[in-house]
Each structure stands twice: as C-alpha cells, then as structure tokens.
Image 1 (cartoon, helix red, strand yellow):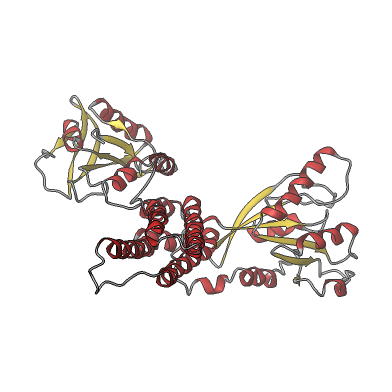
Image 2 (cartoon, one colour; image 1 turned 60 degrees about the horizontal axis):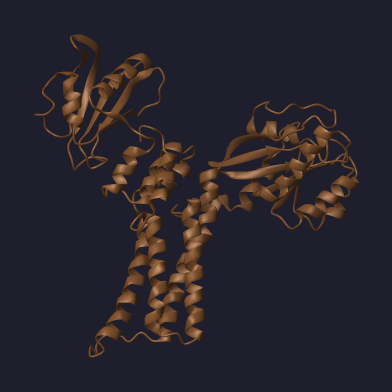
Length: 450
C-alpha cells in the first residue's frame, strides 16, 4: 500500500457534481501539482479549498478540493477528494491528469480494503458499506447501518473473548496449579460454557436466514397449469405490464423475473411456464425450469383457476408443493367458482382475482408467512455473508467434536487445540484472522471508487 490510488467515486453520468477520490502518502502532493489555488500541502486537515484543476496553463474545471490528513480519514491515509462539475468528459480528464502525475487507478473496493488493512474497519463493517450502497429498501439500509456501526461485530467479538477466557483459564490450571484462587475448568464447566457459545451461534445462524431475505429479497415462484393467470398476477403485483398475457396456453415459455415492495421488503417474483404434458421441446424446457423453481424458491405461489375443476396437472402440483413453503391462490373468483374447495381443506389457500386487483388477502398471507409485520420490532442485526455463515456452521461442528472428545476423556489441555480453531473461525468473520484470497474476493465485489 505504498502507492497512491485514485478513482471516480460517483456514478459516471451527467450530474451536478462528480467526486474523484485520491488516497495514499503522496495524495496531497500529486493533487497540488494540478491544482491552482491555495497550496494544499499547507492547508489544514478537513478543509474545503476553492480553485481550478489545470493542465499546464489551461483551466480544466472549477473545483472544490477537500483535504483529509492521516489518520483521520476513511482509509487512515492522506485523502483528497476533488469535487468537479459532473460532466463525463471533464471528470475523466481530471482522472487522466492524476494518473499522469503519479497516481494508480484503484481496483474495485481498494479504498475499503485499505480501510480494513489499516484497522479503520473490520470485515463485517466493510461489507456493510457495500450493502449500504446497494440497499434498495429502508430495511436493507437499516440492517447495513446497524452492521456498519459494529453491532454485529460486537456479538462475534464477545464470543471470541469468551473462548479466550476459557482457554486462558485452562492454561493457568495446567501451568500454575499453585494458584488455588483460579477456577479449575472441569469437563462439566467446559461443557456448560461451550453450550452457551453454541446456543449464541445457533441463534445468529437462525436469524441469518431473515437477514438474507432482507438483503436479497424473498423469492416467490409463480407455479401452475397454463392459463391460470400467473402472468396476470405478476403484472398486477408489480403494477406493470411486464409479462405477456394471452388466452393461448403455453404463452410463457421461460422464466420472467420482476420485483416489488411489500411492507418495505423486496419481493422477487418468478413467473414460470405453465406446467402440462407437451411434445413441444422448447415448452418442455420451460416446464422443467418451472419444476426446478419449486425447490429453489423461498415461497411457492400455486395459482389455480377457480372457474374450473381441478385438473390432473393441478392435483400433481398439489402433491409436489405440500412439503415446501407455499400459498395457493385460487384465481378468477369474479367468475362462478367450480373448483372443488373440499379437496383443498388441508391446504393453505386464499381466493381472489387479478381482474379487479382483489389481492389484499394474498399480500397479507405473504406477510404472515414471513412474519414481516413483526420484523420491524426487531433490531436488524444479521449475518448475511455466505462465507461467514459457513464459518459459523464449521465452528458448531468443532464444538460438537469437543463434546465427543470430552466423552472420550481426552485431557482438557488437548481440547484447547479445537478451542483455538473456534477462535480463528470467528476471527475470520471480523477480520482478526483472515486468508488473503478471501479478502481479495470480497473487495472485488465493491464498486470502483469505494
């Protein structure tokens, strides 16, 4: 991290302003070379300075330059931010001048990576910055902000501290047996303490499922026979005519995806091909995709035509969905209902129609399925990173292995090896212990100027 990096931090489009960020030991010196105004090497930290970006004697743009000196900056290095007028050509010209005068173009996420490596952020906080940038709902923003302020990191750190306390106590028992005031860790005491750690980790993992739904949205697959109104339902829910609707069976032949907000939660709708027996190869491929969605979706929304009796395809689909999370929507209640409701007594269904947008009961059912009305009462602090979830699950396996070794009467001092592995796994989540390739992979997902 000896070089000085730069990148455009705002979206590259026409706008009121654009910001170019420079970070590194020579950032102030380099920007000063192309700035006409106050001597930036002599101004106070955290000041905004008016002037021009120049190339030789030519004025490129009228700018405001913010100087933030180490360590009180985002990266804990000297940072300069150049506020230009938001034209694409002008912004790129300023960036070009910085590169010609000694800067290197930053890699994706490199500013945040430097903030992490310099101790400004831990890994969860760094990830939360990206989540904050990408948030599309108020709940996504709240969750990202809670994680950015260290609430989730604090939970992980407390578990690590507890493991260290147990390990240190065992070490004292072995190395300094004459310390009679020190608690002697027995198998029973160790089991009790590990059970507490296990309980806390299991709770974090359980809540992570909710966090993932908030971050990525709830995937709902619209499944059903042809002409039951799947595409019409999608269009009504998203309030847009996205899917083609006709009375010709087999119109939808591939997956159509779209999203809408329900109680400020992102709902991802997946419209699928109508499921029926067919000899049409292309339609059959679409039907296979439909059936795959049953296993992948967070919720299956089976649409039945209420104006007709249950078909063989409907009956087969009812058998398929009963072991999954599902809602049955009986459509077309504006027509005379002919569907055999007595055959659906054991199923969770609602009745409505897409003609006059009679979907309130369906929306309430979705809210109920995921307890969306209760989530607002919770503090939105969740693990959402898949790698972190894997590390927590691996930690649970290690703890179970310690329990197994206790039953085998393995000496307690030998069990500290597995305790150390637990500590390292948790440390990888917040970045106290980490592998370089994982760090590289994570920051690649960030936008260029962050």
